[in-house]
Image (cartoon, rainbow, N blue to C red; front, side, top):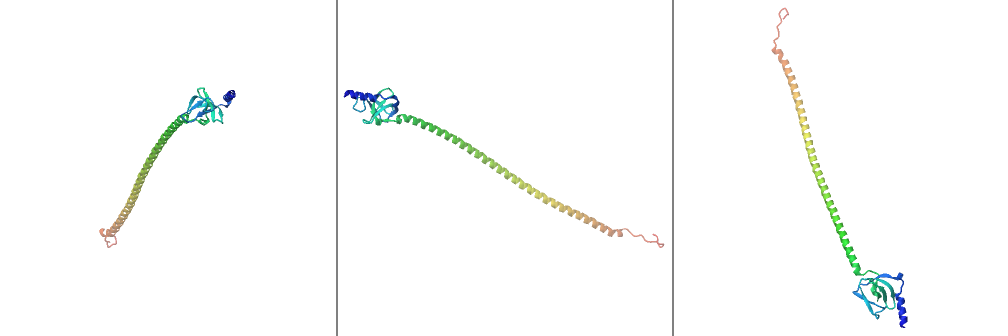
Length: 203
C-alpha cells in the first residue's frame, strides 16, 4: 500500500515541464506548503501572499495544486489560493506607478492647457486693443472728415457771398458810371455856352 502511494506521489511529481504554468498565491497573509495534496501531509514551508509560483499539477479530488516557488521548493497548496491573476501585492505598485504617471500627464496637460488658455486670452486682449484703436482711429477720421466737410461748406458759402458781393459791386459801378454819363450828358449843354450866329450867318 505504501509502495502504491509512493508511486502515485511520484507520478504526480514527475510532470513534463511543458505543463508548468506561472501562477500567483492569492491575497491571503500566507498559506502553508504541504508535502502532499492535502493538509494531512506535513508542512514543509509557507508561501506569502502575492508570491509568483510555477503550477506543476492539480489534484481536483483533494482540491490541492502542486507548485514550485521562486526558491525552488516544491509542495502542495490549496487550489483556491492559486490564481492566474497577479495579486494586489504585485499589482499595487504598478497601479501606483500608473496613477503617478497619469497624474503627471494630467498635470502636464493642465499646464499646457493653462499656457494655451493664457496665450488665447493674451491674443484676444491684443485683438481687442487693436479693434479699439481702429475704432478710435475711425472715429478721429470721421471727426476730421466732418470738420473738413463743414469747412468746405463754409468756404463755398463765403465764395458764393463774395461772388454776390462782386456782382453787386460790378452792377453798382456800372450803374454809377451810366448814371454819371447820363447826368454829364444832360449838364454838358448847360455848362458850355452856345455861340451866337452873326448876321451874316457866320459865327
